[in-house]
Length: 312
Image 1 (cartoon, rainbow, N blue to C red):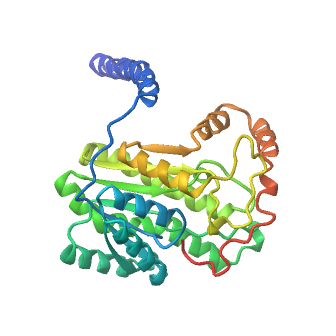
Image 2 (image 1 turned 90 degrees about the vertical axis):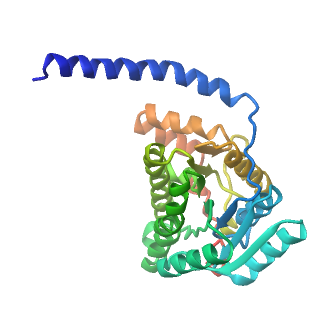
Image 3 (image 1 turned 180 degrees about the vertical axis):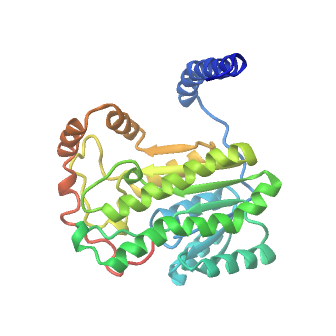
């Protein structure tokens, strides 16, 4: 049984929560339609994985234009070098390194090297990712393990490598390029969805933790629909009116703008959030009808992906 004091204290906390819900919700809705002043990232040191191709390269180029010193990393050193050179040709500052994000010792070693030669990293973009794109029983064990290692577990190593310095200064930004697959399941993407659910969980939990420990360190989770890059080569959106395949340039622009606005969770396109609301409130049987409308079972039938299965 609660004492009278405990009952009053719990009632006070509940009423305060209701007040915040009633005031913050409309405030955030109104704020989403208002122009925002983007933060200045000139002088920031930004570490990005999977910078050699796709939206990784697109983001690296854009962050470079906004004045950040971009640390380009990729499992393919040649493509990472190309991205860094493109940034330099545009007048920016960049460095390039080969990195296998699944090797935590390599991540920690490179982090120490960068701190000594370039400076403490203040922005981290976890972008590297792979996809098998096969029915569950057709996925080789090794590829499923690799998917989890690249898309999820590697985030532990990169965040651990740089978060300490960010917390000391109470300044920084950690960005996770997750996916709408981190909020809803999809056929032929069982291991991919599992990995992205994990990536979303890491970011969400870390964001709550840092809100108390180091509020100056921001966390942004990016959840796009399918993007027309080599990673999803052959994938097709079977609902081109409501959810067309995303243009890489548009996606990169949206991500960078969202990071500069310190947005915590970003769905691309924005109306994807409506799907999540529907999933939360509708019965499972209705959700199955929604997946039939979206023709999720057909989207991966022509999937090819990167034939080398290279980390993007």
